[in-house]
Length: 315
Ligand SMILES: NC(=O)C1=CN([C@@H]2O[C@H](COP(=O)(O)OP(=O)(O)OC[C@H]3O[C@@H](n4cnc5c(N)ncnc54)[C@H](O)[C@@H]3O)[C@@H](O)[C@H]2O)C=CC1
Ligand SMILES: O=C([O-])C1=[NH+]CCC1
Image (cartoon, rainbow, N blue to C red; front, side, top):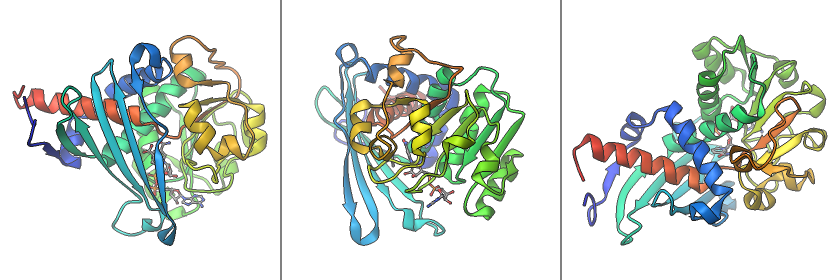
């Protein structure tokens, strides 16, 4: 069997070669459904551990998970270093260790940055498919980093947008990203989200970048950037008035400032909607709070590994 005592090493370039966003959206969608049905899927996923590195205002996240249904076992190690912004080092650095569940051997050490960037957008796209209106035409993105780019890529596969708008506190990065996609740079977040059908907040902000009063009734919001209990991207009025979905209820109650600080009520995990156990409310204002869950990385890493092994004619 490949890599039993000699794990494969897979670079970001190799991982990218085997990841297709359309396929990933389907795979991640299924994993979110499975996460909401642990009895059948046999998912084991403790809420991740974040080790604060206060001296550098950064975090090390440890994200293990197992899916019995996929027979996939992996852990991601992710450094979150906002202070790297503007340097040659990315703000998120990640490695995924993929194991053979039957004997515990390490099968692969793979780059986790590409997977993190793409699977997060795939999760938002999967949620959006259920929660946004099918005729959505205007996409607004708040933030202009890696997640901003991958969210435009993923959502553009599902919707025929007539307009994509970007606002970021650093205008130069918003302008560069807008140039890639023929999007419009806005002078304020309020201008960007006016009448937008789908809004994504993908910033490092610790305080709200999106106010409820700016959001059109019936819009869908993917709130992706606030992943620790002391940070939030959404105003209290928005989480109070919208129907709030999360990726993991357990994770959100521990990690989401948008839930904890705003004292927001969680209506459902998006997986429960995918399974048809909870309503989608496509025509009401909806919010998907994405924290990122290990199982998304586990299934993505297995997908990459299996495709790589097949392409090499390995067992
Ligand atoms: N939910 C999930 O599964 C995941 C969430 N994330 C989170 O998404 C966010 C964006 O990640 P990336 O795009 O990879 O980072 P990035 O470093 O590539 O981009 C960050 C963006 O946030 C903006 N920003 C930074 N501080 C800000 C502030 N105080 N107010 C407003 N904007 C600010 C920057 O100008 C930049 O446009 C981060 O908070 C990250 O931790 C990242 C990976 C997975
Ligand atoms: O799920 C993930 O990988 C992360 N969520 C927040 C920072 C990284």
